[in-house]
Image 1 (cartoon, helix red, strand yellow):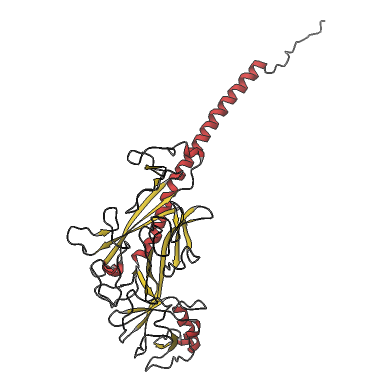
Image 2: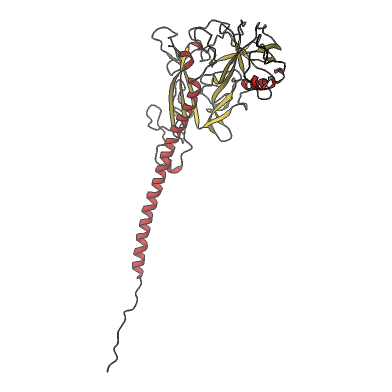
Length: 430
């Protein structure tokens, strides 16, 4: 009997050629995949840079809209329009006029100077506007016990204020300090307003809050006693001086003066929308420390003034400080104040603001730069590139110093958003 036998086939692996072909195919697949991945990532970044300035401009527009539309000094007694100091162009200090709002900063304004060529001045970025307005936050009006004394320093005033009287005189004084925005050193900037709509600025120092007010006084209503200046060399006054106040006079609380500007931060070279609680002060806001950053990559703020009637006559247009119509002088409307009669161009005749905000993206990455024409050298008239700050109202495009016919190109995306808002407190009943 023969022993059976079987022959098992030997195990085989990849040959060298097969391995090389496999590796080659793998490299091709990975190369194609990575190329598509990098392209998709660059495209995603490009879309992100495209959207960021649009989002920033719209957020800034929404933020400003809240204050512009609601601007009001609560002066409903003034004629012909309410809230005569809702938009602050000027005020006086020590009898000298001080400008609070500006159009197209050049560096040549009084107290101003260029700090970074083609970029910034002390007050804000070149060509941008500064806007100061009054916004109600927690409004209230409280009668001043008559007779109202003559304007001067360290004047005694008594107020009909009984909001905190349920807790006694001390609690009522605390409630009054809260209503007047007392911060431990002084009150917020308040106003006193008479029966004719005449008004003055008013501020209470810490020592001015007295403790001798009585909640039980329901005859003369001398519930709160303060000692403060109603006229001094340091207290802001209405433009062109104050007018005498006639009884009855009311204290207006719960209003906040707010100033807006655009300034490039020298530490990171990023332009920012900034805000200050208080009147713009050329002597300290240069640039000063009172302004705080609200939003990054906002590079332009432009304000145009819309009048109820055409100040220059029929056919001259309703909007001023545009590319074709510019106010003369300081290029902001004049402000007569309560002591003088307003001219047709006076700020009290402005019923709306058209403001434009231009935002930019962060600096484009290399991948995003390759997907757009950031290195254009075309003249402004023929360029298709959008990588320069666009013109806005009467703020023209910044031109290249080395080639005046070419815009100053950069590595950013830009977007301008515009809104036109009626001042609600000047259009009620219209």
